[in-house]
Length: 385
Ligand SMILES: [Fe+2]
Image (cartoon, rainbow, N blue to C red; front, side, top):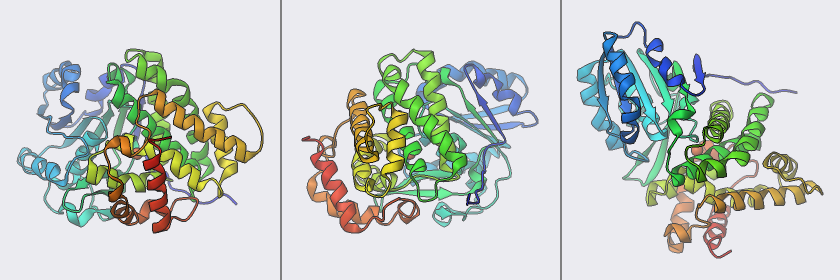
């Protein structure tokens, strides 16, 4: 029987080249806009900011974003935004920017503190408009009810999940991703690939999401290398933007699983970019899961372009090799050793990953502490393979 599912998505999703120019239209009725934008992106959107200002709105621009943002970065934004008192928050950038913008749009009032809202459904209502535009093709944050911050004290990523983090308007404009550096394109693209694979093989997978996930896998597999090697290729960038959007749409209703859970300590303790951590761990978690979902992994392999045929297990194994090959050709390190993570850190990382139960519970095969350690060790040795 088909399971129940809730789809909580932005009211409007604008997709396509040049769509960023619809932003002012979607801010109609707002007077004070807080705009958080990635510093390198700002010159691209400066004319748009002038257009918004010339339509009578006041815009407070901040570029105070750092990758994998610590809780302190959010805290630093809240006071000036409270003083400004916006009626709309706009986040234009990668996942870090959009996650910060989402949290600022609710927490700037000071009614709740960040430590009170970590976890699922702890966040109060958002009373102002929220618009997001993605400038990378990967995180999917532009369509999710999730924001992730780094707790530098506990050295762990922490997630806030709430329907009040879903944007009113999301703009996915591939022109904003033109010129994105190759390492960022590769890492964010493989993050999107991971979203699709982890949603499709999720314990709570759902047909309405399965189709998006498989389409996303196929689009990313066919276009990521071109996007990495030819940063100005709009066709590849548009395909990646769509694949990434599909991956993002998987996240709210179904979400990710053990790859993302095990990636958390890599980001939290060693500052490994989210997409790189996922990409390195993905084939090793797939190896671990294979016994539980070879049929689904065979479908993943077909979406990746594997045509060799054979049993589900053979197809699935071929798919895992495809993932390793794609990552390598995109310049992503093969293993933890290449990320300068010491083998001695593995027991603590495994312990930290086991705390991310909201994602581990989604995994098709139950992950115990010893399994998490074994996956990390396999990923460590991956550098030698
Ligand atoms: Fe992700």
